[in-house]
Image 1 (cartoon, rainbow, N blue to C red):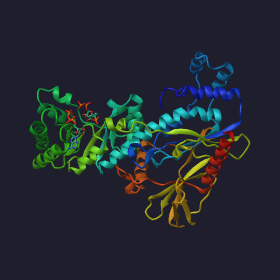
Image 2 (image 1 turned 180 degrees about the vertical axis):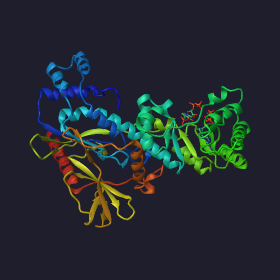
Image 3 (image 1 turned 45 degrees about the horizontal axis):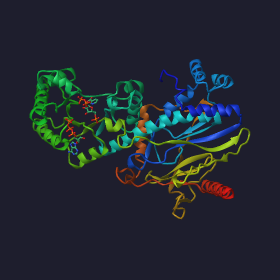
Image 4 (image 1 turned 135 degrees about the vertical axis):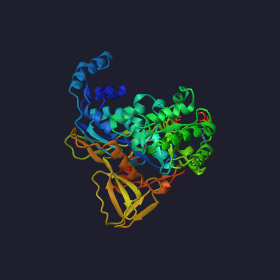
Length: 489
Ligand SMILES: Nc1ncnc2c1ncn2[C@@H]1O[C@H](COP(=O)(O)OP(=O)(O)OP(=O)(O)O)[C@@H](O)[C@H]1O
Ligand SMILES: O=P(O)(O)OC[C@H]1O[C@H](OP(=O)(O)OP(=O)(O)O)[C@H](O)[C@@H]1O
Ligand SMILES: O=C(O)c1cccnc1
């Protein structure tokens, strides 16, 4: 839990709009969807992460006397509105896809149903939290995939865009599949494993490399990973590391969790040679770790080159998602109802770009799994009150090229509703699992993707379809709008 109240972590326009609604009172309850449009890094999926931080934020939402004073000082807000803010808290409903779940474009990751002033205020903070962590978790998942079972250590704190990006980026990287982080504060806050090696400066501060290695090994005999590239990997680093490992072995020490780290040069060549030398000296089980501006493509290439690396330290490109700097999640109004009415009136946002036209209505999402393999067949976005029967045939169609249809035979698929209640009437009804539990969930989630959708380059997209009712509703709204537009021409 952070010490600072994040209520003012918002764009000014959310507050000016709130005052506008306050001055023109409405009874409207609105539905907002937070979703993204394009999978990061050219992949075919994303991992949804950040819900725990959203929950903490919503729970703690209140304007302190200092917040009110600050807002007054802007000379934008009137006394009656500021007075209203003093008693403000969230009273609505929030549904969300649990953290660690594999998600696809256009699916509401978070759905807020609340009085318009409340729902509007949440926009910026929700996007800020979900966008960042989902991006880094997705990147981590790709890096982990490339390493084919080897462990990935998250090393990025020093290169992250500030403290929060370091702390929550490491949290997200753990959920995405890293086995540990060098970030000690993340370790403390989220109870995740921390570990590390040592820097070049450690070697440089001693008269020679051997003495530096030996001193380190005495201090940390059970976590002794020696950095071998300060002077010359093959002529100095490896021979000195072997000398120290031999001394430890001769002293009767049981060598576990020991090995080397290579941080520069041709990692494929050097790791192969290093392995030969270690193996010849009886240290074939030593960890050979590598770091040096790595990302999923380099790790994949090094694997193809037969590099003898079995542990990877990844910093800059992971914590900043170097090749894909933003997740691009948005928060769009989908429906409105007046207090007391039971029916929502669907709302749509038009765009020249068909992909950007929003999906109207109060919706939910069903994941459709192949009953036998447990893999994802498709996702179905539908209206919240729709029910489906797994024993019946289901026809799915592509919402853009509607003639492309698939028939799922009853009994061959299973359904799971992805959105779960998180807040109901302002009260939190959801318990966030621990980060390591979410990591576990995420591992299982990734296994529900077909291999074709996990590969790094040109993966197969997963189908996200609209139910017939939702599709008809959307088409009717678009036609009505187009008729209105023609009348105005
Ligand atoms: N066999 C390899 N195949 C493809 N890329 C490699 C291979 N070995 C290393 N690399 C990558 O090439 C880049 C090497 O960068 P560069 O030559 O600038 O620095 P370096 O060798 O790490 O040395 P220094 O850290 O001293 O600058 C790194 O991103 C590294 O991960
Ligand atoms: O390359 P990245 O993926 O960003 O991984 C983190 C890097 O940070 C460290 O280098 P740095 O030069 O900061 O310090 P050092 O002296 O410990 O090598 C480490 O040795 C890695 O090279
Ligand atoms: O522990 C390490 O080896 C480490 C930590 C942070 C950055 N680079 C390396």
